[in-house]
Length: 325
Image (tube, rainbow, N blue to C red; front, side, top):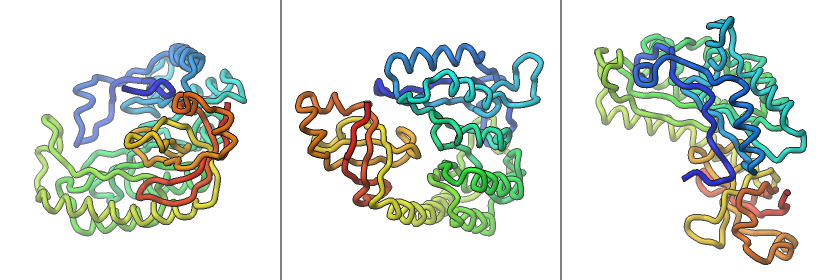
C-alpha cells in the first residue's frame, strides 16, 4: 500500500517502441497520452490533499503528447506539462515531482533544463539505456547506438551535473560477447550514474529476441550481472562517503520497519521502493521538545534537513536537524 504522502500519477499508457526484448506494446496497446488538463487536475487534487511527492510514470514518459492532434510523432510535450505544473504550484510549495522511465528519445536539452530550473521537479531522471555495445543496442532495436547514448549522458552531465541519473541495463542478451560486457563495465565505471539496476535477459513470449541465436548460459548471465553491480557499488560507496558531514533536504517516510527508534527518509535523488534510503538515528533536541506526542505521525510525510554521519551499504545514516512545515 502506497503511503499517503506520496503517489504515482500515470500520464500515459501503452508503447509504440520496437524493442526486441519487450512485449509491452502487445499487452498495453498503442501509446496514448492523458490530456494535459487531466494531469494538471490530478496534480492539483493530490497536492491539495497534502501529498508531498508525485511520481510520474508511463511505459514511455518522454513520448508524452506526441499523439496529441496536430502533433503526431513530432515533439514531446513533457516539458510543456512540467512547465505548466511549475507555474500552477506556488513557489514555496512543499512538493516533489519525480520522473520515472524516460525513454532516451525526446530526452533533450529543453527537458533537462525544465527539470533543473523548476523548484518542484526533482533533479532526478530514470532513463533506461539497456546497454552500451553498439551491436547489442542494434539487436535490441534501441533508438540510440553507442555514440548516441554516450552523447546523451554527456549532454546531461554538461547541462545539469546536479541531475541524478538512474538507469537499467540488460546482460546476457542473445549474442552478447565478453567484449560487450567489458564495454558496459567500463561505461559504468566512468561514474555517470547515481543508481544502476542490472537485469539478466529472459525470454518474453512473443518477443522478437526469442528467435535470436547465440544464447548466453544462465550461470554466465549471473556472473555478468554481478560484475556490473560490483562496479557500480564501488562508485556508490565513494559518492555516499563524500556526503558525510553535509546536509540535505529529505522526505520522511515514517518509522523504520525494524524499530520505532529509527526513521527512514529519502533525499531528492532517491525514488521510493527502488533506491537507497536515509536512516535517521538521531533527532535534534529542539524537534523532540516541540513535538512530544504522536511523534511517528508528526514526522511521517514531512520534509526535513538531515546531516549525514555515516554510510550503511546503499543507505546513509544521519541526524534530523530541522523539521520543515
